[in-house]
Length: 372
Image 1: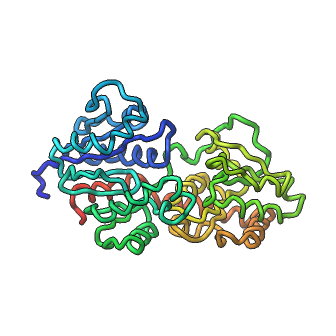
Image 2: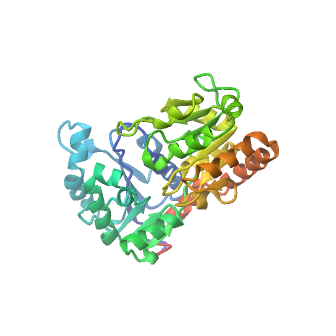
Image 3: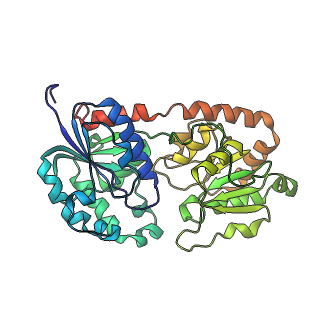
């Protein structure tokens, strides 16, 4: 593009759920930084009626498009989502945009609404795990279609890029890796919790979602000497995943579940934990690791998927299902202050390698055709 040419860029930041998801956080952080970078090109930001993304849009060259702007009558959120695939593309076509970009994983409208159609490649979970595939069978076909029709992809890790190219035969030249960062809410500063925390504790996030692999963590914890279990209870953040029971509770009386917690409470857990464990079997990026490392938490992380990429050398790494190795590492962290101190310093240093300002510059280059 020449410097004199002003582009029209449509960005889909639609919020599909009343609760704030990782995709919503990603979108808000990118959009906040994009407004600082680009004050000339015209942006149309597609939002829902939920008040999360919309208040972030303040720049004069960024225009918010909401359902009420282009759907007649008073529609419920459920109906709006159903009509999204059929009505919105026709409305967006009128802008004659140069670029359409969606933050939502491998999701593009069936109708071409811009010269260049760019998709986000966050993960291929629905293709990799039967539990997820069965929940939303239509998503599998949507991912395959997007792989064939997108002109370019923003992939949030090298791992996700490799998965996309090897699984769906996408040309690697079309895929541009742009890492994410910890949400500014997790700023490394201590926050008071809304409930009493144990004096010392270990914690993890995942609830009963299968790929989060909390079972392995619980098995490793149960191998610790009883005195360590009592002194450092294991706290599990996250709820029941599609009514799947949280079985690890039976392994030790010192395992506690907290369910879903607020961001402030989560920040407090990161700030005060003796050790944070993340044993996920598959992550497209690994927000959770960066959040914990922003607080200097000593981190024990499973190897594989994108976690090695995000963690670098800042964590103690174990095979996702190797409870024995995890138990050994965990006992070392709990009983050897020097190891904890080294992990804390490594965590903070690694977290600083990722920033939304840097990532937004890369996304801006992709959207405006500076890379391709």
